[in-house]
Image (tube, rainbow over the protein chains, first blue to last red):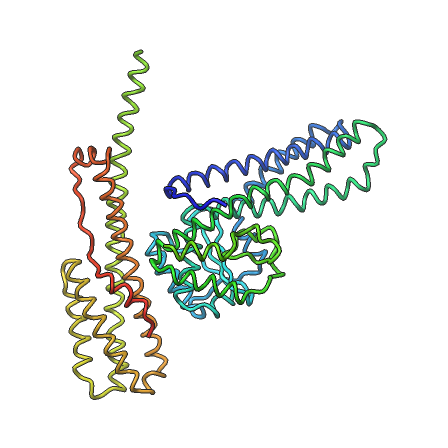
Amino acid sequence: MKEYKREDFRDQINKNKWKSFLLMIMIFIVFVLFGYVISQAFDPGYFFIIMIFAIIFSISYILISYYNSDKIALASVGAKKASREHHKQFYDVVEGLTLASGLPMPKLYVMPSPQINAFASGRNPENSVICVTEGALKKLDKNELEGVIAHELSHIANYDIRYMTLAAVMVGMISIVSQIFLRSLWFRGRGDDRSKAIFILIGIILAILAPIVVYLVQLAISRKREFAADASAVKFTRYPPGLIRALKKIKEENQPENKVNKAVAPLFFANPFKELSSTHPPIEKRISILQRM
Amino acid sequence: MLWFLIAAGIGIIIIFFLYYNRFVVLENRIDNSLSQINVQLKRRADLIPNLIKTVKGFVKHEKSAIKAVTDARKALISAGSLEKKVKANEKLESALKTIFAIAEGYPDLKANQNFLELQRELSATEDKIAYARQYYNDSILNYNNLCRAFPGAFFAKLYGKKQKEYLKIAESEKKNVKVEF
């Protein structure tokens, strides 16, 4: 793996906005293709109706997930709003770091989990959320928590949150939709006719490939993003040991999580699953890069 | 050819505008971060009277330490320039340290909910002041970079923009901030 190359903040932001846009276009095309395949496989007579339905559906799907991706991500992990009274340190740390980074104050959430973890979500810095686990608030000291929060804030500043949440939410949905498609094919489409069989085959391939391809794209990017976010986290806190200690604690204490949906795993500060190590760079590598700062 | 010249002319005008706006944005960011420092300093000064009241209830004999804090607070409120405010804040910070050190000898005070809350808030505002100062200097760095590098330097001269002074922070002080009471 190549190390993170220095990039201007604004380049990264533009890249993320551009990628988010491309992702939405891609999702649109995938849906319309699905519509096409479905109409050809079952009854070409309904072609226009199915296509119109597919277009309307995909546009509303994209708009809904664009404006609600953060809520969907939060709901999928069962996060609750953090209260200023019970999570004073959480608020203090975030307020301090928003001053250090010049970002607007995100909304704060806490998710019930004994593991140390956190994620940020939203479509832009003005509409962003940071969610940490109860375990992180309990087990991390102030400097460690600052490191983790600063990492999440840099995801917000870079617009990583837009791209990552959109990818997680949209891809998560696609996997469900294509599963349904696959299942219905098994019951109905025992080929009478050659062309029908071919379309069914394409349908199956699409259904299998679509989520994998998009997921792979997401994996390829999120590794680099984590290094970049670690680097700008240090720029905010000016204190690498905090983040290093947090990562070490995670390595020693975290057990694999089972409540988190796999689609949202790449959003997290540290990988919630042990077996899916490819969503995140190895913690040792992150620590060794931080130690050189 | 004519169209090409017109397009080139428009392009150049746009570049002039863009650079002007860039300066404005960066200057606004500096102003904004400056006001953030002032907000946090004020917040800090506002917390002190409560702290003094709480401490006085428990600590009778440490008049000089308490006076040092109230004096430093007065100096902070009356300070005019940012430099002076930051200096006064440094004095206040060390006076507060003495108070918190004294508090260690008074178990009742140390266990007082009000005192603990104030202590937490004061250390949180101190962190925020440090972060606001850091951002202020970062913003000045960005601004100065634009003023010095080419072609920004050319536009800086054109628009009469000059480099700005950093707010000086002793680097050791940043570390003191990280100490938790």
